[in-house]
Length: 136
Length: 209
Image (cartoon, rainbow over all chains, first blue to last red; front, side):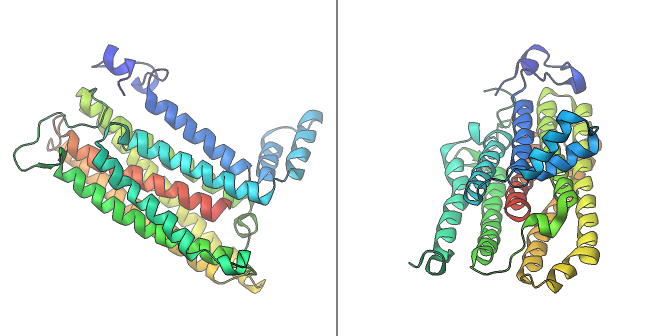
């Protein structure tokens, strides 16, 4: 996890807010988390971006067609649910792996950290309404 | 190992570690695992109620509106920024720059306070203007109940995290936490990142699905 920032500028750091943005892994994770959050909001409700563009951009030709397209865009419900769960799991993994330092932790701690995930899977499978949803 | 790998810089003394990990860190991880299971139970209960056929569960856009989801997405971003600020607290402490560590910690606390402020505003708006209309429209009463349980329980964690970080900030200012006490800051960071991690799940389940 050593960044060039820490190695080359150990005492002072450099760049905006004394962060080496290019070589600092944490900042890249932060960028990924922000981008994934935007994607997460876009998938279920594209019209939110339509409303946003309408608010911040002037209603001229191409922008108007973009906002109209965003208002009309709708993804399949199954795709929305599955993709949102996958995106949320990716984001939680990024936080746990890099920010909570699981990447450099001992295997015993990683195993302990995985316990709630296993518990969640069992719990979800156990209490899912199989009978009423799939008739099984 | 680099300074950012999460290891403590000073060696633990006799009886201060188990399985090669400091007792403080094991204690925090044990607590977090227990807490995560509590959240898992509440989220699974939410999902069970949500997926019940004919549950009359409102879609998030109907319940919160466009502005509500935009505001909560902003709140999510603020918490992510607060989390990365906490990472810099530890990084600067390991460099020995306690002044900058202090500033990053203030940014972390500020992020937590802004998050709580926006959540309080949202709750007020939903209580006064929104949820009673949903109930009148015949939507499931479990929706507001589970919403307040999930976001309230998480908000309580954020409030505790803000207090925890404030105590660490005061300890840094008084010189009780120095560049040699990285373990103290790392453990506080674990809690703060956990709060961020849980919000990612709550945001997805409650505001997006």
